[in-house]
Amino acid sequence: MTTTTPAPVHFKIVIDAADPHAQADFWAAALHYEVEDNAALIEQLLAAGALPGAATVEFHGRPAFRDLVAVRHPDDPYDPRSGTGLGRRLLFQRVPEPKTVKNRLHLDLHPGDGRRAGEVERLTGLGASVLREVKEPSGQWVVMADPEGNEFCVH
Image 1 (cartoon, rainbow, N blue to C red):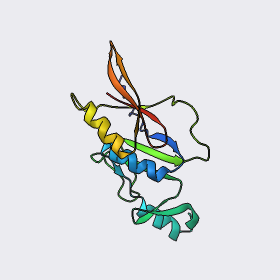
Image 2 (cartoon, rainbow, N blue to C red):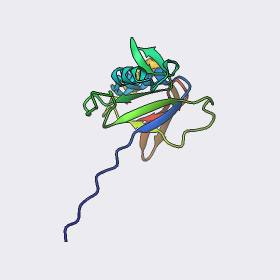
Image 3 (cartoon, rainbow, N blue to C red):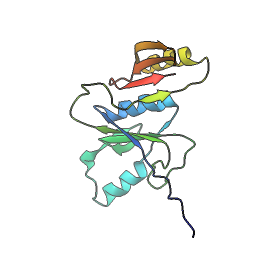
Image 4 (cartoon, rainbow, N blue to C red):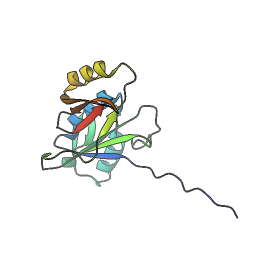
């Protein structure tokens, strides 16, 4: 009897945001990712009448969706027709309500041995803030917040 292993499930992490484009710029810089360029897809949708102009903005000199934008790992594949990443991605979507409580999910960044302090300084320069430093028997890390207050850790 032959059994096949199911293909892994593709996923992206979606983060609610007041300003998805500013968040995409922060996280692209923080992770050394690329902001996805969906201009070709948007232009096709506009030309076909499938997307109203009010659903778009100009972002980095090209058309972008007004309420969502993603960043992707630069080495991962992407669909050149849509600009959509096919690997590691963060998608930022506009929501009307502000963040009010602690995240139930967060990113842990691992810059490498001996690089935590420099990375915290770099991220602070990008607009993040230090919330607290943690020193426990199991390890040390810095809890930070992105420009919209979403917590993440630097190990």
